[in-house]
Image 1 (cartoon, one colour):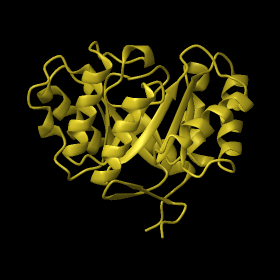
Image 2 (image 1 turned 180 degrees about the vertical axis):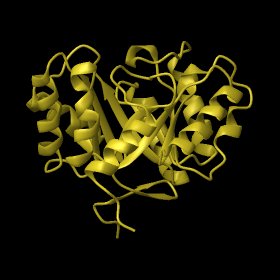
Image 3 (image 1 turned 180 degrees about the horizontal axis):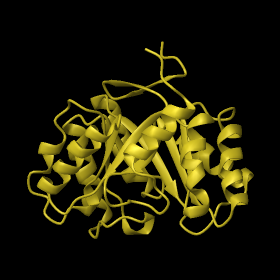
Length: 244
């Protein structure tokens, strides 16, 4: 049985709280260098933002299986750069599942039939699924966030991710309140924090309040308000030094 300080992603078991390096790149070579840099900076896992690839040939070389990867192919409506149709986008996620990445990120806004297809395929292959949702303009009320989190958890993934935008410190406190409360109401781990300068503190504070990991930049930021991996690791080690 895993303790509260561990998280299973595919065949990997992570010590938590962990730091996820969010990796972007125009081609496989650039993205591969970013993955190596993230690991050198101290990332425990990486998110591959496949939607940022302009040249996709050979992308499978990035998912070698020796390091935990969250494979993401983000549509434009959720702040990503993928320009194709939904079926095409989901087919790429399914290819990543067939190559046994640790985890795939599927947006809750994905049409239900396609979302279910991804989750079913992942379960067959022993790949974890993160169901994600983003609000790039505001932080809804706690009750609204909890209602959405319950629907996301019911979709069948292994963990959920809700990210909002903080226009003020009040918004930051709200998303942290949500994180604390939602853990009593859903049965899967929840990643939650707020984007924007006003929300920067939540990227670290969320780790102290139950979020299993946070996202940090490796060069180019994938969302406003990110710390980089090395800075996140330093802050976390001061607040929560690991033993052993």
